[in-house]
Length: 275
Image 1 (cartoon, rainbow, N blue to C red):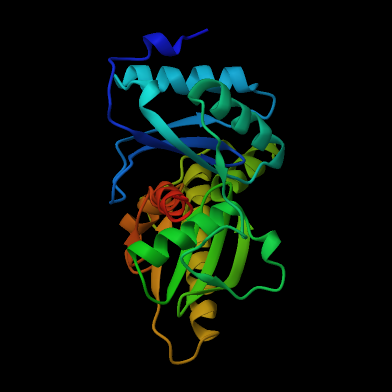
Image 2 (image 1 turned 45 degrees about the horizontal axis):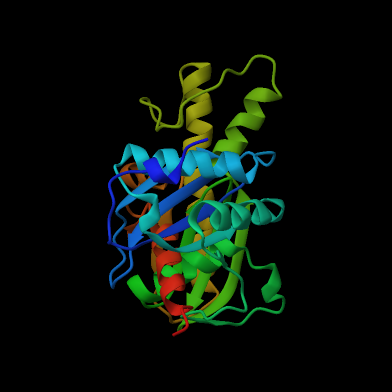
């Protein structure tokens, strides 16, 4: 087991750890305790539901050691999770390895926005964190798109969370198609060189996924805007392949922030501290 005594040079500088637990990946982000939302370092690992708190702690200590960061400098811990069975594992890890009571993101905590949603307890923690980040960093009427295991769309109007849509994740859809067909090979998501008319099986698959997904994004964005006549909206994307889609179809998203969720964790940590 990795010891905290060997976790790097001694430091009096205090830092905060944010952890975003998704169905596919778990992402760690390290922040300063002061103002601002810059991320010092971030790491990603696969979400393994059978992983123990000790295994998770060893992973995280190893990440910190690789960056020369003293684990004893961690003074705060916050996490969002869409895997409920993983929550006690993270809480135990924070207690045992960082002597910290982990703050879990939920709809009843202090949020920088209001919720107008009949069943707020059903809103995923990842969606709450993204909405918090957008409320502070990109204020205004917004459509937030997170391209993870699922593709989520959230509508923010006048500082109020109004709801949204959930579609299958792009990578999940690609894997499901190739896994359940005998003759279709795995492909890399990209815009096919010949456009929509694929001249090979690989290019045909790339065409279907690229143009199909751009169409899905465009249509849901359009319908969300139509649901609020007369209002202007910015579209903010994060996660997965949002940067690649933005490069090929820049008209879809106004802002792409790959680390939006981690920044939201820092915001929620600051807003929920008691003196």
